[in-house]
Image 1 (cartoon, rainbow, N blue to C red):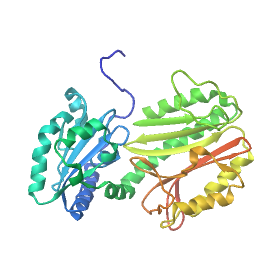
Image 2: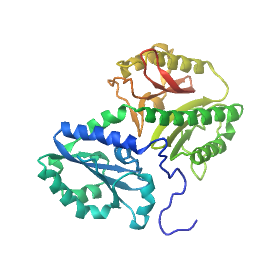
Image 3: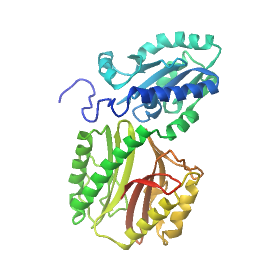
Length: 369
């Protein structure tokens, strides 16, 4: 394809209203408005981009594909979206979001002063979410109309809302986990006896994920027995030289991310240790327990093996982004977490993973590799 502007033709470009209906987004907007009201905020500026879209996707369903977008939300629930990109493409975005209006980012310079005046006339302040991911030129453009110091940061409140998954969100994540479970199980079956075929198999995995409703797919694999993991690149990186390998797959659909990883090749004793580590972690994955407790449970059974550098942050919270958890984080009953265990011992490497929802009667496992 020969074109005069950037084009991405792969990935899902639809809003499945059967799985995420408009009622879902109205309920989210209601929760955010309640958050605003509690902070004496009458209007909220939300920023997102292709690298970090969770805040803006949570409210609008829109995922910036290459650049950035800004949304304005007021106490009535009206959401206006300003998208960076050519105006000729804006009508293509209408089926992807419920936003009341979709305009070019350049028009925000005209609309923002009036919107700010209306909010401030109500006697409430203005809030901001997503400042940390803004490019300098976006900050400069908005900074002509707002005083950053006067805006109240609401990222923390947003994070708390997004951490608690609604039933439709759980189902969306379960579908992502099912895709990953199927793909990595198939990869182990196809390449377990001869890992030299992994680069080709990884490419086929990416294509299947994208054609099955995936929005974005990220893969890594090893050509040195698991010591390092690298992406597939067009120029190629060579054929695995060891008898074992490893693969990592992150899959995004309907805005939601899940991830998984596994060792591939002949079974070794270290693989059993990884299984025991995952068992120990899942056994204590209950609401109110801490990420630190999971570290400690794994440390008790890893039998002198070292943590692999890739999994030094073994617990992540899944949702509209993959957020590594801090050691002091507390597990929530209505959140979903990924566990990644990678061990190294005597130049042998092994990996395993799981995705689970904490429960009082034990973790609800959605993926296990």
